[in-house]
Amino acid sequence: MIKKFIISACLLLSLVSFAQEGTSSPYSFYGIGDIRFKGTLENRSMAGVAVEQDSIHINLENPASFSNLKLTTFSLGGTYATKSLKSDAGSANTRRTTLDYLAVGLPLGKFGAGFGLIPYSSVGYKIESLSAIDGAVNRRLRGNGGLNKVFLGVGYKIAPNFSIGADAHYNFGKIETNSLEFITNVPVGTRELNTADLSGVNFNIGTMYQAKITKKLSLYTSLNYALESTLTSKNTRNISSVRYSSGFDVLVVDVLADQNEQVKLKMPSKISFGAGIGESKKWLIGGMVSYQKTSGQENSYNKASNVGYGKYGSVSLGGYYIPSYNSFSSYAKRIVYRGGIKYEKTGLMINSESINDTGFTLGLGLPITGSFSNINLGFELGKRGTTNANLVQENYANFSVGFSLNDKWFDKRKFN
Image (cartoon, rainbow, N blue to C red):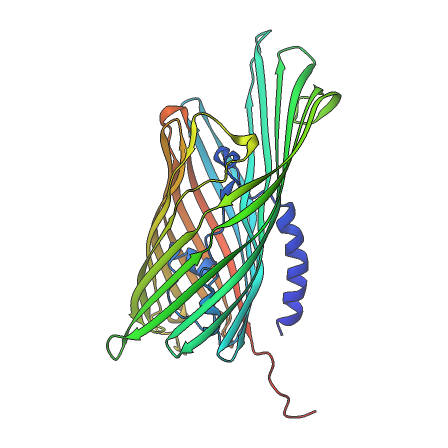
């Protein structure tokens, strides 16, 4: 039933992912932008905890999980993000609607496969520094684009409670930054336009293990390692004199400089480990920790003397509860209730201040009657950054919707 829906959604949403502006943060200027991908909505609603060997939900954090799927699963998620930006100079509010992921998982006996599209990082900001005083220097800054990933992964079940897996990601995208500088009441200004075309490949390997502690309780563990890789950036820098309007549109008067270069951005290795305890189809509580040697991929156009990149680290705690997954009398008892808290050290340092992210999450898994499919709702509230040292604090509230649709493929027909 879901085959036609998958094909249509893949064609439509892959086009949407290229066109969307996935963030509204001044911090997205640095590195390759804001890292948006945090897993499927089911896992995000538990602050990123993804340790259970689930048979009807895709776990995009660990390729070993694909071997545990029992049904063909199509997973799709999107977010409506609101953000309040605050600094010593003022405040502003922004809104964005984005596609978060699109993935398909296939059970193949002891094997399992997964593939899909992930908008991984985003650049999106529009900043003005204007003055009405004659002779004053004014600036308009704008950036957009990001990095996308197409992935293919395979998992294998070595034993009933132990799986291994690996996946490959093809990375591609384009980032464009536009800086306009002009003097009040002078109709001609200077524009610097930087474009970076990104491409590369990276690989992940993972394992998942489950063990019975008592008759009801089980221990779940997950380990994932992203290998170090290289991202190729083909950069173009154009400096021109321009005529400007009241908006961001400009008309080029004369090209002053045009430069092309190719640089290699190092994508450092990353390790994630999670563990949890729970009763199957009833409840689970667990935690995840992640570590990366360095956090940013500084390019030639976004280097700054007051900016540095340190070690990345994150810690999260979350879980779920199902009152009665097979209740016939009460729909509310079959709902999955999720929640979690998180702390993330992004590694980005500006003016000697660390840009960190803290927040909590809530979610609901709403079963679709008569099937194993479900609709997932998620809410995330948090804070990133600080107003210290003339920086910006971002207070955000994200509302997400996800679909996990299940069907059985590859069955032999009993009748022709």
